[in-house]
Image (cartoon, rainbow, N blue to C red; front, side, top):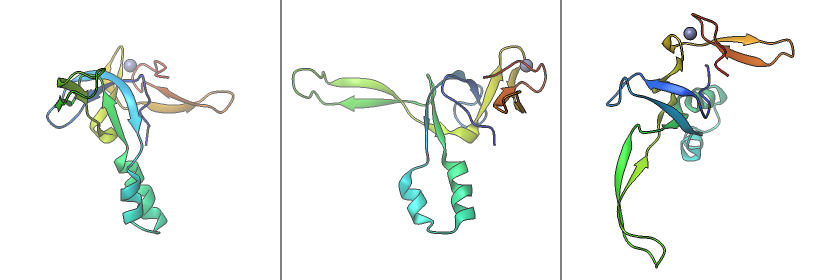
Length: 124
Ligand SMILES: [Zn+2]
């Protein structure tokens, strides 16, 4: 699976925010509770870990949160909070081609590179 990284431009592929684009603000690992639930089966664990990675995309899945005033520094009111969506629901966007499935190449040092599989632009 090709990982999405912080700073990637992505497009949402499914759900309520389908078609929306934004920058990845944060990448969140699977919840540890879920990992404990599935016990010792290692192949299962891998599968769940892969499916449970989530990302926070700027401006996507914004929840309105009512907050109470707390002390003198925090004001109460409604704040916007970006909520995570599954990493599998987003595609990386190539600046030239739009949403693509990146290809993975290795450079001379053996480092992984993600490139657009249409125009071979380096996607970082
Ligand atoms: Zn491209």
